[in-house]
Length: 483
Image: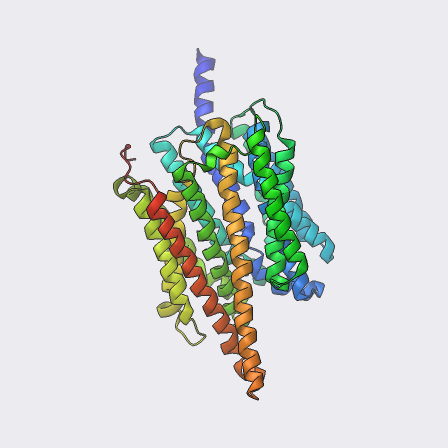
């Protein structure tokens, strides 16, 4: 009896550490999406990279991460969520060490690709573990709030840490900082998380191959088009191949007895709406962060640390509004919270259209950053819970993987499309100036900022579309217990 009581106490203590560990894993995975951004100029200088090669420091991660997320989600369901999380974290950690010690371009790009693979395995399991460990009710609501806050905070904290580490130490520390965190997670996970054994089922190999290949072709085609232009033959080939492979994937999933992606997950109105909202919001946020970091560093000549610290209000906004959402969702419903968050992001993007080097930080940039933080903190929390509505436990991994996939693809497509539009606007203005006999140096600032302004307008439109979908699909006021 004494032994049993001690075991119960130990189990209770371990379960208390489960959610913090899951949140740290989610934070580490999302942190790396943006932490490298402010280190790019230093990486380019050290390795003498061309602009095309430099872009692949970001794209190598995005390509493997976005392309393999569905496979990572299903791996958790098949082989166990804890085991998949540990494998993903170890891969991510080893790749981070390799990237931090890289002495040439090829090793760095390989490390980024392996980081993407590790994150694709780890990220879907974090949300699925929450739904597995916590039944519907107040405890799951609190866990979802923490998860949503970490997802948004990781993206913004990456910008802050990237600038500080690059300037105070070296660009290598944006990779090396992951190593102690990853090792701690890998050691602690078997002791803290329960062993959620995978469900015995056939592996849908053809579905896994066609689905992964379709996503990879889509991400590659968009990245290629964003860098080389939308008339690039390789981009066209990849995008057409992606459409064909998606057709094969859907046909396979309808035919097999145990599909990798049960298509019924997409027939649920609330879940599908949550996936689309996540895609559109990331397609708004990633380009906005991209344009802001470019404007502050390249146009306004801010140092990496200064640029990073100026993004702090986004992180503060994420935490404040995530906590507020916990109280407001049971009162006002998820729909109003998601609508409020997407409207905040839309207004912030529109406000940034006026951004100029002469503007005061407090009166111009600060309100926009707080608005983006409000949008992220509010929407992520309410939307993450909606994405897991009525999901069976044995499909939690793939449902979580779907949410992460929509987010990753939305962010990748958003940056590629909006950045190419911005670049075209800048090129057209420079060409017009040259035709009028004006020196390019005299108008380059205005031309670049005009391109960014067009990008911010399109980002606001995407947030507006997310708002419209939320109005039609998000659940209304909750009748459950208020926690």
